[in-house]
Length: 242
Image 1 (cartoon, rainbow, N blue to C red):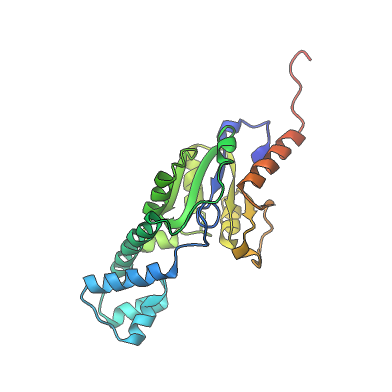
Image 2 (cartoon, rainbow, N blue to C red):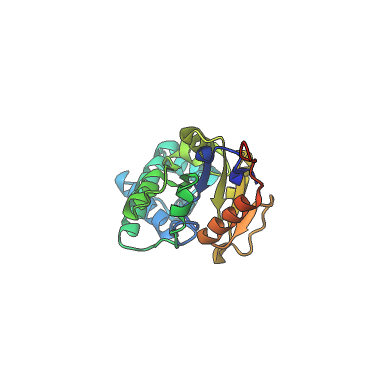
């Protein structure tokens, strides 16, 4: 596995992590956040849609139905989607601030930080990622990136490898792997030319992966152990004069 090859300069190898479901408990932001964000965006624009129109707007994705709902209300769909997502990010942070979600055991990050560059790349919003990093003092990470709010950020979500490639560039890493818990994580890693690690959690036990990940692990501690075993199993070059 190239990411654990001791023949490389370990300082230029990156281990990137998804946040939701990998570092932070829970598959993702609760659906109620998106519902409340829509209510707040409608209230700001003084809009009162009928039930059918509201149903078109209710999905959290920027899709044909959302655009159709906006057209019924004669509002710019791009601008309104961005407004709703700004409210969504604030509401998600408010829930996290009162302890709605907690971290998995991430103590193994310190061991990894001694050998690799570490980063977070998430489909969650940038402000939410930054809040989690700061709240839990996840100082081991050299890079933390969530997606921008709005349509541009939506289209750069995984499985688009955009933010993974950005992270590798920012870290000046020559090689790396991405640790995730979803099909989109494995696909994004593959498209970015990275090794993929799939974290098996109760919420993804029935996931059908179109691409077999490089590794399957049960936890971050398991990942640390597996990488250590791989490093120790790769023959090291002889020392001059030996």
